[in-house]
Image (cartoon, rainbow, N blue to C red; front, side):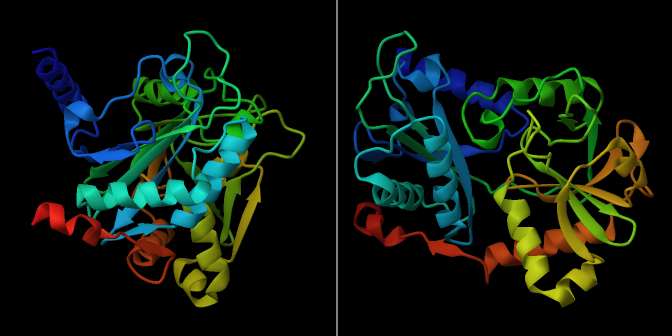
Length: 337
């Protein structure tokens, strides 16, 4: 029937995706107020403005060994993104969102995976106008397995012909993601794993789904942060912020990693040429060394000591010691018995 044909088409498309292993285990919609494990019921109305206008904010949190990593920080960012573009939270507010996310993770029974969620202006007409005064609509899905860092290194290529999102949109996580998609695809065309956005003056900004950091001579770990007057910008990722906070709070860990200082500032083409190491930081890549940039080797062309040390640091923090919110799997014990 039509339902089975749709599910088969979705499965076939997923099998061709480079992130093919990810499987949805549970889904929540505030339109129904329910969680489902039925793939055929994991549906979004075609008239929802998340579909027809990209009118939504989103975020993604990692589930590691039965707990959501940095859940409060991710909820803070979802709220900030929503406020930046004028989206309302669903009924129940932040507490309701948190409860729904944890229930979705529990229903999926996922102990190592990703919790992905979207805040939409909701269904309406097929025009541009929102339903003013209506609460936002929350969708959430829990998938497994967990995203993995690439210890062996990734390659990057600047894509100066792809225009980055202007401020303030570059500072919010929204589903208006077409520039990111095009930058990623153009990176592939250039023979790299990731395209890199550049500012009009050639300064480095970010990867489509990750932040950039350079280890410069003398041990300065620098992340791009254009001046406030710039029309471009970067979304300061939570993973990068957490790595910097761990280093600044533990001088011995910083010394062991070869980091003398963590700095946000301009990153020029000259800085890239001088860099001893380059790395990507984000929820999907954790900390992944960059071994080649625009066709040139970074350092020796092998994963650097600092990047690997920072990867170990953040992965340890994800498993223990960091901000973790336990998933209440017992909510569904009676259903699974």
